[in-house]
Length: 390
Image (cartoon, rainbow, N blue to C red):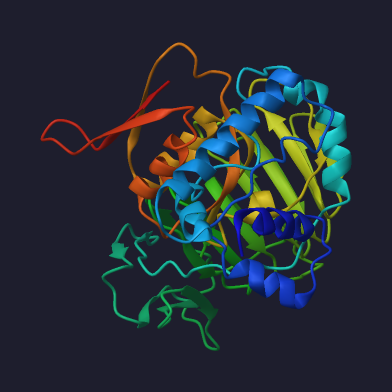
């Protein structure tokens, strides 16, 4: 499969028109990317089209200059880039906002994608008495019990809470799990609710649920598959936003350093609360709360973009370089610095397996000719850094 065939097949997949055989063929090349077709739309100016054509040709020329199969080199040079590269077009997001929302509402694909397993798992569990368990060092099996609940680690590294048949006590002890940068983790709460936590995330929850509601508190990002219990609603609070559900699947992104809290619904329904405002989301919708402002915005989205992290990918779409680097910083555990006066309007998109090395991702971005990077390794006084330059 050459690069043009890959682009065509990827676009067909996004539109939900691939056959099972075509999907399998595409997923075999899941670390490759497509570049927005520079001739396919009239919504760009001649200058924009010329810029995209220049980038596309640069990548192809780099591939052809090496005497190896074209696709293998395309895969190498496009390994972190692409889909949309909007440089110096600050009005693009505003002008095309409604059109993009309409396009996404017809292209929602909820079926899972094939992704690499992330083997390295590190997490810290803090129990109600203040004792700490390093989950990456703990062996599989029963870790402890807290009166009414048994806590164990499975052979797959998952943390599972199970209610005991004859508990010593019925009090719900508060627990906390912290996921550091560069890792993600899965746990099952005592009611059967499954939670996936992204890098640099913390979840506070009871060892067992009692009373009239199931309440947890999230900082960072988490995906929830909530066990149904109509008599005991499940409530997530995250940076001033409250999500109330009975049984459903949804994602919340609520990092403290981000300006927005985003709740994306996959299945069922949820009710969002923020200050005096409330909305009910339907599947495929995303509720957005901007910090420091009132109200809740609701957009129709392609849920793949919100769930890619859970499946082991970065998935960008017309994202600002700073937003791209925030995700990279959290996953690769690096600090990011910016040098240059022309970075504010550079936007990227694409898909990239998080199991790959940082250097590969940055090299792919750099091969567009739009940005440059310098990696500064750890020193006694400073952590590993990535310098972004124009």
